[in-house]
Structure formats: structure tokens, C-alpha cells
Length: 271
Image 1 (cartoon, rainbow, N blue to C red):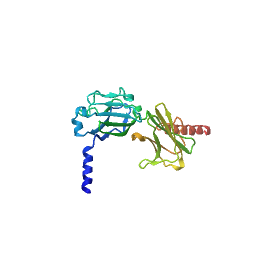
Image 2: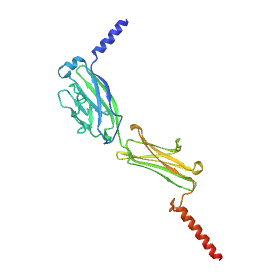
Image 3: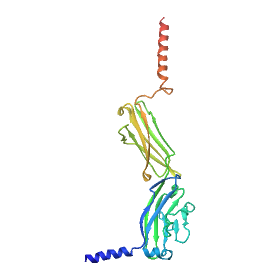
Image 4: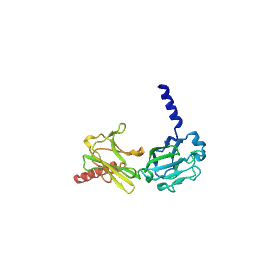
């Protein structure tokens, strides 16, 4: 019985046709930053490799759930860019020097956000077929990231962080602390869809009595699908806000002049 089982496994291995061994797709690419290479590595049966034109070998790539391919290559013919990838591929790129695999890959010269999604490599022969799917995200980092503090009253501070022009949809968190940062609870986060991107705002009002002097606040922006993150921080000193014309170098000097003027005026009045 064991001998028969081993023979069955051996026979199945022997007759196995086309097999995709690896699908290498970058999980995230920055919009317009560099080309993206999507490679589909497969093997064929020895008799298929030796046959004329490789026994009807056809390599196709599909994007998202489209029933029509965005790329097709048949050995002996020129590769074709189709659909959303029309004009966006370097069709001269070679993944190998072998006639059965040289044009198996997609070389996207300038990936942009509309090319985010799942890519399926489909390889077939007269006798067999195989496919594999992976996702690529083309992301756009923030156009701007701003963090500010305002005083709604003398005893509290509002921390606000704003990011603009991000894709895909981002997340944002406010944190407190310098060495050991902790996430702040009750943060109000609003995400606003724009044309092809997102703006996001996070804000939180904190009472001065709950803070140390000084307190470090941080803002963290994340794009989960792209594994991208960036942060910004500010230092807040609890207490009443300084005068609008406050200057760290001149204010103490001006204060002393005011006190001196009052003293002189009082002295003259009593003289």
C-alpha cells in the first residue's frame, strides 16, 4: 500500500505541467517615484520546453477583477500592453534570456495611484494552467503635515494636527510624552475625501492641570496599506498664553522698563 502511494505521488509530480513558483509584486510603491517590476516566475514540463513554441504557452496578467487581461505575451510574438496598462509598460524589458520566460514580467515605468490593486499572473499551455495573485499599493505621502496649539481658555490647550493630499486613506493619532509616548484617548479624527486623495485632521482639548511643564505632544500619520508613517511634535508650556507681542528675548527687558516707569512716576508724584 505504501509503495503504491509513493508511486502515485511520483507520477503526479512527473505529469505536473506549468507551475508558478513565485509572484514578486512590490507591496507598496510611492506615486511617480520609480518604476515597479512585477515578476511571475514559473516552470514548464521538459517536453513543453522542448516543443515548438513551447506547447501553446501564453502569459497573461489581469488587474483587479477585470475579465480582460492588461498584458499578454505568446513566445514568438511581441508582448502586448492592454487596458489600463496601455502605454505604461516597458515592453522591451526581459526577465530572463530564455525564450519561454523572457517577457513574463510587467515593468511599469511610472506607477500612479490608479494602478493600485490586485494583479493576477495567469500562465497556460495546451495541457495545463496556473495563476497567482498579489496586491500592489501606489501611495501618495502627505503634501503637508502641520501641528499647532491653541488656547480655548486660560486653563486648557487644544492640540490639532492636519495632513493634506494623502492616498490611500490614512490614519492619525495624537500622543503625549517625550521618551515614552502614550496614545491620547478621546481624540477627534475627521477624514475628508478629496479628488484622488484625502485630508485628515485630529484634535484634542487637554486641561493644563493634567499636564507637566513642559509637555511634549506628537502627531503620527499612517497609511496602513502602504506601511508608511511620519510624525511631528511640539512642546507645550501649561499656563496662560503670553501677550501677542511676546518675544523671549525682549519681553523680560520690556517688563522691567514698565516697572521702572511706574516707580519713577510714583516717585515724582510724591516729590
